[in-house]
Each structure stands twice: as C-alpha cells, then as structure tokens.
Image (cartoon, rainbow, N blue to C red; front, side, top):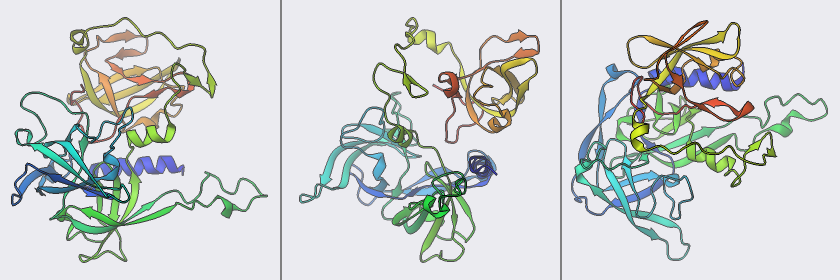
Length: 369
C-alpha cells in the first residue's frame, strides 16, 4: 500500500472519530499582563466538530499560558501570520492577545517568555468591533496542564523503495530522524485519565495515541500516528519562489502571466465561497481533462461539479474526503454529460495543478472569506 494513501485513509478515519485536545510540544511561556493573577476561567471547547454528538469539554484559562515556540517570531518573515511583537492573534476558544514585550536570557539571548495583553471583549474568539486576525493558536494553561512525553515518528527510510538498487545496502537509506522524543510537552488536563490505545487529534499538530507500554496517569506518553499539514512549515521547507519568475519543471520562464483587471471588494463580495467535502469522484467519459465530483456543501444533497483537473489527479477517487473551496453561487452550466453546479477552486500550472484545500475543522457549507 502506498504510504501516502495509507496516511490519507488513516487521517480521514481519525478526523471523524478522534476527540480534539490541545497540546504544546515545545512550550513557550506567555504571561497576560492585564489578566488577573488569581483568575481562572473554564472555556467551552468542541470535542469533535465533525461529530457534534461528542459534545464539549471545559478547558482552563489563566494568566500564564504556553504556546508553541514555532508560533512566535521576533522578526517575522513574509507570510508568517502568527504571533510577533505588536501583532494580535486569536487563542483557540479564548481571546485575542497582543505581544507587547519579549523577555530574553541576558547571557544567551534565548527567548524565555512573552508578555502579552488580552482583550476581554473577544471571549470566544470574535471581536465586537469586527476587527480580524490572521492566525489562531492552540495553547494550554501553565498551572493546569500536564507533563507528557511525545514521540514523533517519521518514515523509516529516506526513499520509497530502499531495495531498488542491488548494489546498495538498504540500511544506507535508514532515516536517522525517524524517531524524535520530546520530554517537556504540556497537554490539557482532560487527558489525565487517557487510557492506553486511545486516539486524539492534537489541534494543529496531528493524530496521536496513548502508548500501551509506557503511559500512565503519572507519566503520559503519546505516539504520533499522522501529521496535519502546516502551511508555514511547508513554506519554510520549499523556500520562496524567486521574485518575478515562475519555475516550471525546474526551468525559469521568461515572464509571468499578467494580473487581471483590478476589482473592488464589493465585486469580490458577490462570490459566495463555501466549504465543500468531496464525497464521490470519478473520470468523465469522453472528456480527457474533466473529473466529475459530487460535493457536499451542507445543503442536504450533493452537487455535481465538473473540474478540469484530471492531469493532476489521474486517480480521482483519491480526492474523496478532501475539503475544498466551492464557488457556490455560480450559474449552473449545462454540458453534454450533465450540469455543473459550481466550481472547485484550483491553482498551479501544467503538472503542478492542484485543488485548493485546507486542514482544520470547518463543516460543509461554512462560508469562506
């Protein structure tokens, strides 16, 4: 079985069944300087947006929190939208916070903690004045979180087929980073009695299960099963494209396609973008470029959409379960093989074409803006 397909199927299954929790693997201390020192709030958090019947849980919120180290940059590069000096972000289920000071070790320059302010009017994650933020971070309360060890597993080999070359010892393809153990992680207190074998989604991080042999209420141990895609990590790994050039198959193009005529925000607001989930996908007989998609956008029925993406997805069934962005108010288009009731957004060029998708927990029909 192709490992990518296996991980996809695993993630799709766990996405429906695994409870969500918050965990911080590489903690960075955050002090909310305008939050009362002795105050503790109990905030409502969804156990699984894919299954409302799983209910909600309470998570404690206090003056001192932990966030991920990777969620802060003192000098943020382009396309980094998370926390930075002077920038405001949302804490999941909680409040907007703004970084006002960075405390460092005087000798090493290492960042020890962040001082932030919170906006008490934004409880639940929305601002009454309508202002927006571009990032939502997960977090745990320092005083209430639990210590945990987390094992991060990667592929055992650095190549898909380590035995392809008879002259090379397959052990030379072993991945030295196939296992990384983190021992200073913090998880929310609802995991205190997590039983061995239980599966969870650590929000924004991936799917994890409680280790059978080593985990106990006194020392929690979690193993990663599958990751969630991270937009910023992907940007870091791939690097920025050279300015003014588009590379196709490794070769620079002489010019880029010009940007179309400018429109106003009022024009754009006419387009109704909705979250959709692909429930069925298959080829279209007699149309080499088209794929037939049956998409759920929360209407109680499936919409038929024809998309010209077959060159990128020769096996359309692998699209089943993907969350996509649908132009929902596009006038239906009658074609010889059926009516197309919308458009699925995609991008790229030639063999790099791909549908626009995302991770997280939006539901079919949720509005995209």
